[in-house]
Amino acid sequence: MGKTGGKPKIRILHHLARSGGTLISKCLGSMKDVVLFSEVHPDAMKFINPVQQAIEWHGLVSKAEARAWRMKDAALFVQMCVLAEYRASTRGAKVVLRDWSHIDYHGLPYQRPTMRSRIVEVLKDRFEIVQTSTVRHPIDTYLSLMKLPIMQNIPFSIKMYLDGCLAFAEYAVQTGFLRYEDFTHAPDEHLRTLCERLELEFDPSYAQRWQTYEHITGDITGTRGGKSEIRPLKRRPADAQLVAQFRSYDSYAKIKELLGYDED
Image 1 (cartoon, helix red, strand yellow):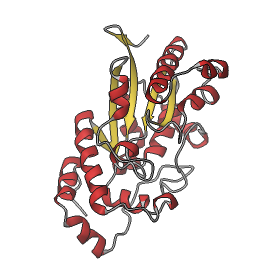
Image 2 (tube, rainbow, N blue to C red; image 1 turned 180 degrees about the vertical axis):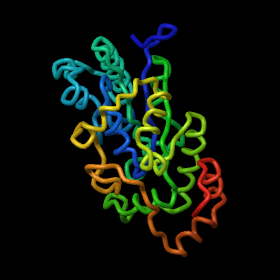
Image 3 (cartoon, one colour; image 1 turned 180 degrees about the horizontal axis):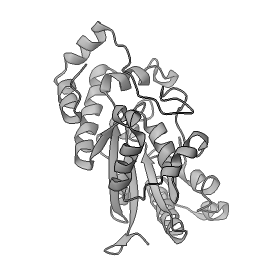
Image 4 (tube, rainbow, N blue to C red; image 1 turned 120 degrees about the vertical axis):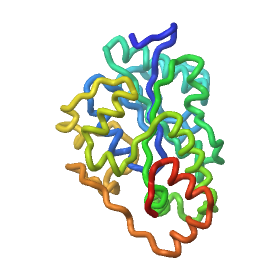
């Protein structure tokens, strides 16, 4: 039943926006006996509703049950996770929560960042947390993030971006992480590693299903990993002025050191 010391286990995958998490999550979600909730966060349910995912994607909660719940926000999130994990476990499946880590470490334009993992904070009393993270080079992630229409015309400086990236990198070191660039070069190898860290059974047949997996949020068309195949990812071109701006902050060097990136 996935319980240790009286608490059921719940699995959490952390990554920042535009860092390859959608593609990786499609692969994980395509594996046998994995129930994936995508970009969920206890403080952002009005933007992406995990209860709706539990009802429409996974059949773990009924509409009548959801209507009967009177709690809101974090309390509702916890209630949903408790019921979803219990019902998934009776099927022999395991719940994986794809954390919407952007809310915690960058926040905008939704809210101010807290610089801590709220999903772990609200679930740790009810669950044994099994977690890991994925990362991408901070300049590539920034270039992709700033192309999003929702990020236009908001006060989001490079310093703010790097502050969030550093806090996330420090947390990723604690949870263990793998790099998106490495994943695109050897998907099976790195998915095996993710599965080991999340205590999931690696299912190689995911490779026949991930392309058509639809229970996901986020943009798969812009990953450059491809919609039908996973190709080795090349670096995004960055102009010298932007690189110089990044280099002017000590946090940039710290992020690269923590995550094992040598190049700019």
